[in-house]
Image 1 (cartoon, rainbow over the protein chains, first blue to last red):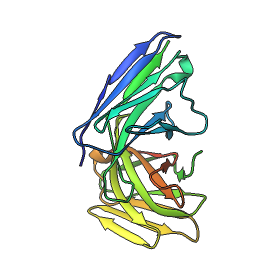
Image 2 (cartoon, rainbow over the protein chains, first blue to last red):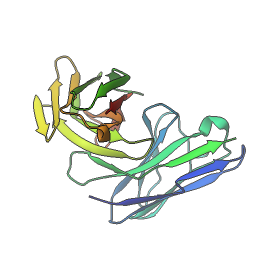
Image 3 (cartoon, rainbow over the protein chains, first blue to last red):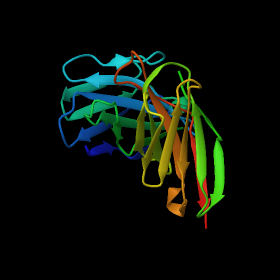
Length: 115
Length: 112
């Protein structure tokens, strides 16, 4: 299965700043998925990132707040913009295994705390 | 929106006992998957059951699926301290290919 490197693993950020999370995969993948996990909660899909096209955002998430880049088939970034304490979460990138069954492999996550 | 509701929210058992977690969902699915998450880290895929399957085994894991009741259960037999984690069900809903919707999760604590 794919190996995903995600960084930073954790960060403490000030209100109003922005932070970019990087996700590197050791193999080429068509789709990458960005999830948010708020404290003690389940995972919510933010957007799907395809190489060469705009990311597709889920309801409640907008590009201005969570801009995503996907410059090639092995890399993606998610930026959390103009952060507030409500953005304190674990952000996870994931990719499909390619089995056709939508099985996901996840990165270790980026735990952001916004003060 | 959240698809799956899991119960119990938290479960504490002793090593060697069996742990059962349940997941209910709301719409038609292509498959249902279970994932494990250790200490707020990334999730690890455990097992997948397709909509036309009723039961599946993998090592100490047993998954059942009842599409008429829109529910699934995960049984971990002979639990170990290393099984301590949060467990999430996730569904691939019909017509929403490539998108997983995760349940609320069960926090399992296995004590020695």
